[in-house]
Image (cartoon, rainbow, N blue to C red):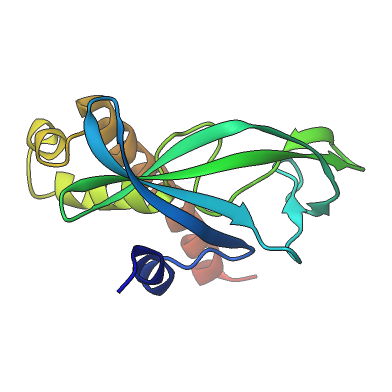
Length: 160
């Protein structure tokens, strides 16, 4: 089974395609470099107002850390598009796997934060070949997400 097939099975990306997977080296360790491209019929989404917007240009490649496979680090590599939004002007597009300028994917932050509930943050960092700070930011992201959604759930429970 191909790694692209596994990624599509466990983490399908709406409006994007896993194009190519190569085994390489980054920062002294082996890594699966997974190139991600937008679907031909996919529209870029403005990160400001979250509406579709026409493309403006492309930025340099960015790496987003993904959940490791078989102890090998995985990086999603993508050239972010800038969009010409009618409301916000020129903005970088919003992608479904990451938030803001974070270099960790959302699913990897969830993965690290889940392990951080069972082990010390230092042990999680050592086990998954990452830094203590990335584990910290993952836990922080999940806590903030939980607080935001708990407030929304409480508002819906109270009703009009």
